[in-house]
Length: 465
Image (cartoon, rainbow, N blue to C red; front, side, top):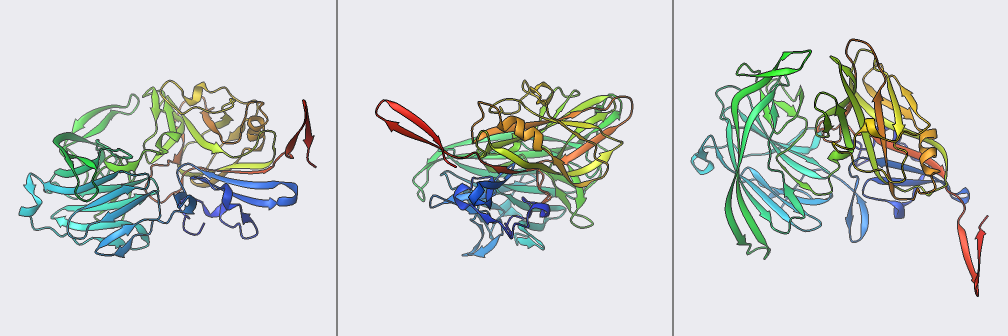
């Protein structure tokens, strides 16, 4: 638990009097015994991952970057990562198999061999899962940020004279147990989206002498055009391209919220990165009438009214290990609010189904089959918030078709009417500020086990008391 404070918020960390049931660990949950004699348990469930499997055992993720054997190394998560010291790049190896090597090829059409680069990476103070190459060339910083399911390289363009084009050599294992995402986004200091052009050059397939596997060599290009999209009409959200932008910018970021220092931006979310296929990005996000579809990748997601457009939030928790028919003694959903506009009014429902589907453009929060139970949630300030969910969870667990290990999802529906802006924004799984995504905590008493005793052709079901 102490190794994952960014994932389990402080409100739920003090379990000093509870014994963890290690055999009940999953990739994204812990279970504690409250009263073994009476079959009472506490389940703590996150969106994302807190454990990785090694030697068939779930172990706690630790994203601390270590200095070992000529590399910076991270190996206590779902992948093994080596960050090079003699060049800008990294080698990402999934514990499920598959590998991706990413190395900087050129900056501004000049090959790295012809540039005088500062290639000394440093671990960021007080942020041991982050590495920075400051002033690699004039006006450019590179960042490496690690999360349980992904590793990402960022570029910060600090002034208008800095290079705006980057090319990477990508060597991707054909087995494809991990993936390199072939798209880049970015925002300037004022959160205006940057126009970035991506292209892929296929250099062919070769067999690695080191691993014996087939690799595809790609040249991945990302180039900032110098234009950003600025809103010209707040009521309609119509935008226009503009060359008037605020530096510094960050490529591979969806939102820029705060600075590491006076001249270095800290990015929020990623696109061009190496990641595991078991990503949780789609499990939280929002439905908006402006875009008309599911938005899952961002620093935070919102629900409420904004210039007449309605946003609804959605959260999905996979593999809830609570047996059918359990008594829910208490349940709560913890979220961290990033900001509040106006006076949002939100109703929280569960999707009243046995096993909740993944969110999608044709499967949105507004369309869920709502539980009879719901919770009014009217947040007034940013920060940690606990939403009581006891009756809502009980309704799902009591369904005849519910099974331990099924998925649940929750719709955070706007209930505000009238004019004005009334928004509650919640930190998303994708954000990289160290703010934890949503957490579900369920304290339950499991039903007594049943024993099937077969006497010839007669089967007796005995309830063990």
